[in-house]
Image 1 (spheres, rainbow, N blue to C red):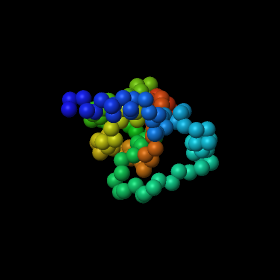
Image 2: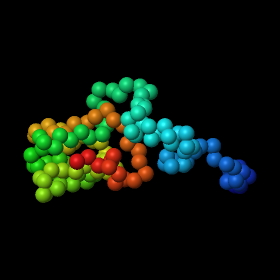
Image 3: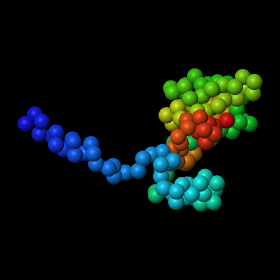
Image 4: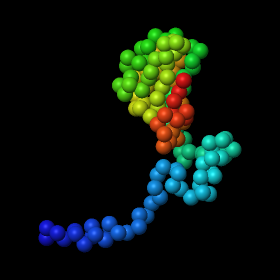
Length: 133
């Protein structure tokens, strides 16, 4: 009885996987072209359901309203916000962000908000799509 699962394990070790690998560079070329069209704005992906009220998606940052108080940096639990002293503005790394919205709540001038954008997957955590300045 100890090794009753052993045949099952060996069978699964040599079977071909049923799913495609992620990230997108492994998907078929027809799908890649579709994703390129989505990225360029030619095609729009319609979400399967409406995002609910209060959904915490990608951060929207109004740079002109920001006063550089650094309160958002102090409350960020994931250290996803960096201060740029030469501009007295902040930079958000969405790959680190946990979308808790504490930075939005504490901002005295309300220059931060959460959008409904949720398709943020990328292979490079420092890509321009995952950095908000």
